[in-house]
Amino acid sequence: MSLGKTPVSVVNLGRVAYRSALQIQQHYIRQHFDSSNPTPNTLLLCEHSPVYTVGIRPVQYPAEEEQRLKDLGADFFRTNRGGLITFHGPGQLVCYPILNLGCFKKSVRWYVCEIEKTVINMCSKFGIKASTSPDTGVWVGNNKICAIGIHCGRYVTSHGLALNCNTDLSWFENIVPCGIVGKGVTSLSRELGRDVTTEEAAPVLLKAFSEQFNCCLVKADNSSTCECQAGKNSAGMERRYKSLHPPETYLLHTTQSVR
Image (tube, rainbow, N blue to C red; front, side):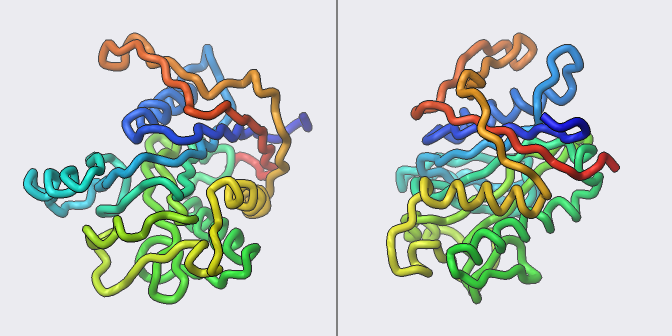
């Protein structure tokens, strides 16, 4: 490892329930504030079973609406991320960066812009021309291909991005995605006219991330596990979470200075 480079581990959780992903994120967030147990900054990659999630913006989703969506066979969660309602499900590559922005640049606006540029760069590698717009996320024309919603506390980020690969886009027909009326959704598969899996998309996303954040990707020992245990102070819960697939762990080393 080169001196002066901040390590960022990338952990592939595979298919994981949304509730478990929230608690796994909290595990890695706590590591940033536990000086006795320091760990690298982390990117969590995963897919979810069908779930609708809403952010903290002041739009009400009454109990009747929550139950309507649950009756479709999806879970429903209210979260502390930014943004309005969206869908996560199989065929969607979800990335949760748990990063201390002090290792990059202490600017939430900068961070969101870099995430957007990462996805745009990734789409370009597939030959897709994507862009940002006054609305959130990354777009191909008037159709959103990637939703972005983050939380940042004490300059440690959580939540992140959800990229449609070969997602069943009909799930989005039950909501107004991100509260944006009159626009649609798309996926890598729809844009390319062929099946693009999350397995195909993940390494391309990692490459785009390493380029955008000026990083070097290094595969780490698989003994670094994505299994995590909630601490005793976490609502008294002591549960272990394991991904449904064998963990894959990497290291990314940023060359950007702390500022």
